[in-house]
Image (cartoon, rainbow, N blue to C red; front, top):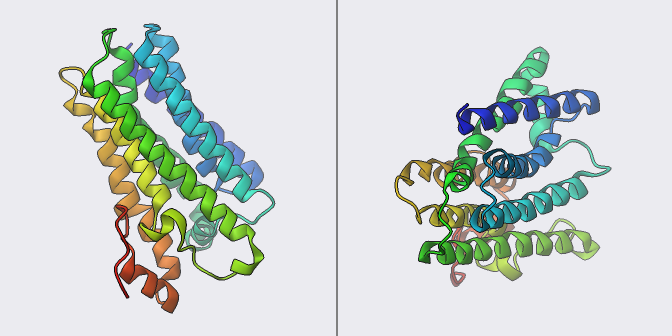
Length: 256
């Protein structure tokens, strides 16, 4: 059977399992934990099912594992002993009697499909048999590392800021957050482009562009930056921060 269809089926079963967990726990934000771990599942399933056992697929699988487990752990720790994330609470209220069915399709099934699209470069790498190391391999790993650094350090700086009681009610504006309003989102998008660059080592790889393009659109225009900035819109401190700080790509802050 086509490996892409097989992995799509695995993702379908995986997201169904997380949907039932969400029903039992009565909180849909478990979908955020499922997100990172889903890519880990796809990477290892592709590695084992295709069975090439070469260096490039192994390295990509390990990088995806490091990223996915770290992200899931971070989100779990952030949500532990707290109410359901405000985004999901709002949907719970807005969807009313249709909440159960809409959660299934609009949260878990949709997320599973997007997960599949973003995973296409990972799957493609596992189908290639070449052992040689190409310039694109090295360049892609450097870009991935740069993105991973921004995501991890951005998350850590924000966590430390929130943990300090003196910062209650204050925006995070230092560290990487001085140069971009969303260093963690910038990092996530960048590392996926890094994996796509590795894919360019092989011919007929342009169709995998759907992966990084999908995550870029999601972060920039759909569920990432727009939803988060909507929460702070109108706050004087945020509007001032917004004027001097790049929304996404790290840049020197503008003078006041």
